[in-house]
Amino acid sequence: TVPAWACMLSGKDPGQLGIYGFRNRKDYSYDELCTANSRSVTEPRIWNLLARQRKRSILVTVPQTYPVEPMAGLCVGCFLTPDTAADYTYPRELKAEIESISNGFIIDTHDFRTDDKDRLLKDIYEMTDKQFTVIIHLLKKYEWDFFMSVQMGVDRIQHAFWKYCDPDHPAFVPGNPYEHVIRDYYIHIDLKIGELLELFDRDTVVMVVSDHGA
Image (cartoon, rainbow, N blue to C red; front, side, top):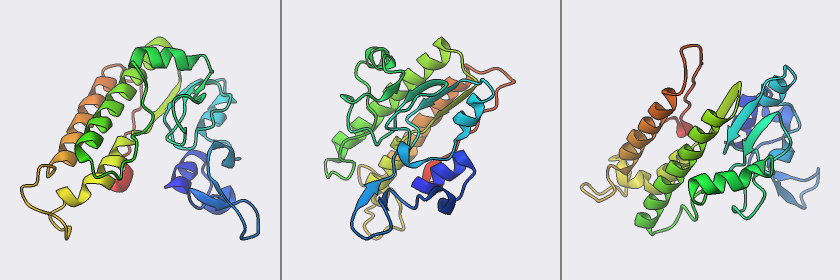
């Protein structure tokens, strides 16, 4: 996943980027590993290239945008952010605005491998709704030429609930209470995307990409 995002946004392959996963070697030894965060991507990504043409971008929870760095536009950092106590926005003062309009922003769900599925499902929906509230607010209030957001709820719900929803999974039990949660969540995401589409005119290009190919 990590090199895929960086490759898609930079046009470089993993060898050129030097990124092969979340955990990478710090040097040519076998001694230490490091996390591939925003500082690991040294090639310009699409928003950097657009900035050279004086274009402004808005990024919301796009992988490998934390730690946040100065850019032409606005950035809300990704799931690599340790928690909302960190400075996860650019510019820094944007954080207070986001926390206010979302009534406590959620960057990612806590412990998505938990056995407490009811709590996790509630958290995924809450995270999604808060993020879309922020997205719509930013798109309406600020000028922008390029916008991108990645919804991590799609990833989290499939990791946590796949065995409950896939009839071919060896642990699947017909009629279990979570049998349709992935389908229902995708419907919810589709409705949220529909709300976004209402903001755009006919000259706007919209691309929706689904993680995990679902």
